[in-house]
Structure formats: structure tokens, C-alpha cells
Amino acid sequence: MPAMNIPNFVDKKKRGEKITMLTAYDYTMASLLDKAGVDGLLVGDSLGMVVQGKENTLPVTLEEMIYHAEMVARGAPSSLVVVDLPFPAQYLGLEKTIENAAKVLKKSSAQAVKIEVGADDAGVVKALSAAGIPVMAHCGLRPQAVHQMGGYKVHRDQKQLHTDVQAMEKAGAFAVVLECVPAAAASEISTQIAIPTIGIGAGTGCDGQILVIYDLLGIPDGNVPKHVKAYAALGEQIVAAVKDYCTDVRNGDFPTDDQTFV
Ligand code: KIV
Image 1 (cartoon, rainbow, N blue to C red):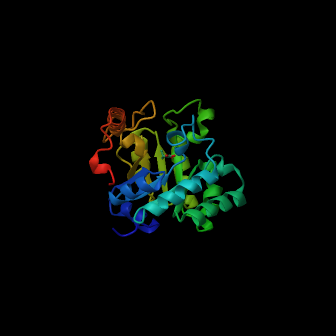
Image 2 (cartoon, rainbow, N blue to C red; image 1 turned 90 degrees about the vertical axis):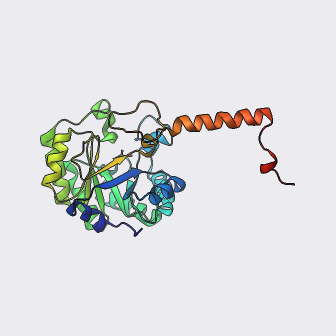
Image 3 (tube, protein in one colour; image 1 turned 180 degrees about the horizontal axis):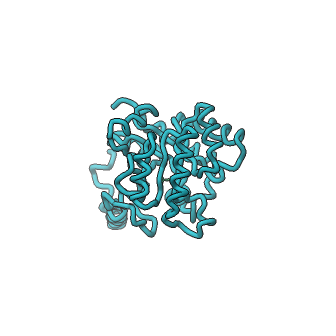
């Protein structure tokens, strides 16, 4: 499969082809998702929760993002690899944000960064784009603002959403993630802008979709949000497999002659 790049990714919208994205955090999973033909992999700061077991995404550091991005990029020769800039990326000043984003691309060989933004942050997106760093904007529910929002809530301010997304397109973002917004608003916005919208909890009218890989595989870490569809129940299968292994070891049934050197 030919490697995905930014122009090809954007052109999928022009051709009316839906874009597929998933999160990935390590080499092995990235290799499998790449092999399955997913268009883009996001090294999401959701790794703070699903990999590190933390309460939210705020504690994740730039070094941790780079550490995971390196592994994912190595495992994904065909997918577009996008890396989240961790909290509070958009408020560090332009120079520092460009320096951080450049560090991500230099060290990981990923192709783009994602940043949680509203219209007020258009300057950051413009500066990154001008520096040759492709930016995927993240609008709607912004998990890094969890304390401000008092939890994870559907973003219902449609006027603000339109303003934010249009500002992102104007600032040079190549795509925009719409998280937890009413489907009708996401659908309307998707027809109004030329860059692709990637939805998560934003209905079918978006130009593409993204899910957290553990959610898709049915490896839940507690409550499963409404927008998730589990395509497998690997969590249960993993527990069952490990229970079988423990039983075999305890009973002396593993290893057998097949797994033994003579
Ligand atoms: O961090 C993440 O995984 C994300 C996606 C859920 C869009 O931002």
C-alpha cells in the first residue's frame, strides 16, 4: 500500500472518500493497524488514560508523546502519523510551540501534529503551518479543558463551533477533528469547509472517523462513551486466555513436550 501523505489525505475529501483514523501508542499495534489499511494513526494524548492509567490527559509530557510517536511511526510505513501536542501546547508562546512541534517531527518521523484549539488560537495554527508543520486542529469537546468544562460534555455551542472551525481552515490547518458535537452541526460544517473533518462522537456527516483503538477492540478502561462501537471483545478474550495459562501452569500442563527443548 502506498504511503499516505498530507495532500493524499486531504484529497480523499475531494474524491468523496471517507477517511479512517485510529489512535495507536506502540509499534506492534501500529503495525497491525497499518497492515489493515487505516489512513491515519493518531498518537493521542489519550495515552495518559488508556496506557498510563491516569485520570485525564493533562499530565502527559512532550517527551512521553515523542517516545510513543517514535514507536508508532516505526510500525506504520503506510499510514499518516499525527501526534498530539500535550497540554498546554497552545499557550506556550509561538516560538516554544513551534520548537516543540518541530521536535516531535524531527525525533519521531511522524508527519503532523494535532492541537486542541478554538478561534482565539488561530495564530498558533498559522505559525505552525507557516513553519512547514502540518496541523490537525481539534475542536468541539477539548479533553485538555476538562477542568474548565467540569467534565467531558457534548459541545453544544454551534455558533462558536462554526467560528472555531472556519478560523482553523483559514489559519492553515489541513484537517479538523470534531469531538462530541451534535451530528447536524458537524454535517453542516463539513460541507462548508474544504479541509476534511474527522469525527469522534460527531455523526456520519463528517469526512472521516476516529476512535481510540482500545475502545474499538473492546478493551475498556471503565465507562464506554456513547460514541464508541466495539468491533471485538478482546478485553474478555485476554482475561480468558490468561486465566487458561495460569490454570495450565498451576496444574503442570504448560509447558508440554512441544514447548520444551531436549
Ligand atoms: O487523544 C486522543 O486520542 C484524541 C482522539 C480521541 C481524537 O484526541
